[in-house]
Length: 225
Image (cartoon, rainbow, N blue to C red; front, side):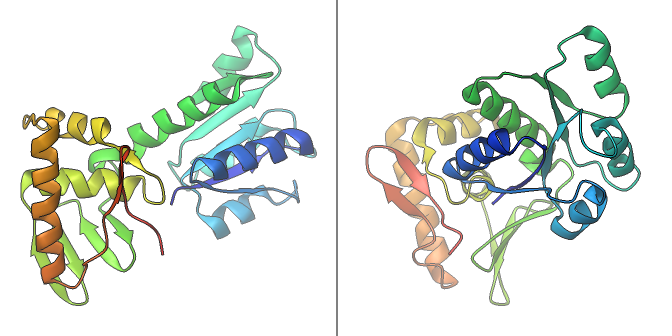
């Protein structure tokens, strides 16, 4: 589950964002001590930071600069200032994108998902994904569980990767087929079912009999617990 840190001093915005992010399967938490933002960042190790510009004590530019000294974690600035200078400052200080208040929640989620996808999908900056004790090695397309190693085919690896990246959320069948299309292995809807069935059989060999759940009419899901 991706962890998202909210550095926002408006409690209404913070509450709404946390509720929406958790609804989408993210783990969201917020800063309460605005003098020690970096300490919380280091403690929680978030996958993404939502950073307001106007904050108590130090502004968002300051904290983004401090984060950049130790991490490449994506930072999405949020601000009521929509002038070009604010945008230029946010990006020049190490921010990855900019969201202007008031914003539509669907737009915010879309930007967050795009940033996470660019940063973490398909092995960019991440060497492994974990779920329920299983470790998906992105370097050699293998799965490790209880001291056992399962070599995966290209399609099996792609299917597990997208499910692990979105663990805790149902992944539509269409999204999985698109991931397979990107790997030059286009398959139709029925062939996806065959691939998942074969993958389940291989997972059962190492004791992962119920890792992948079918959400009828929707897609597939792997749960954190």
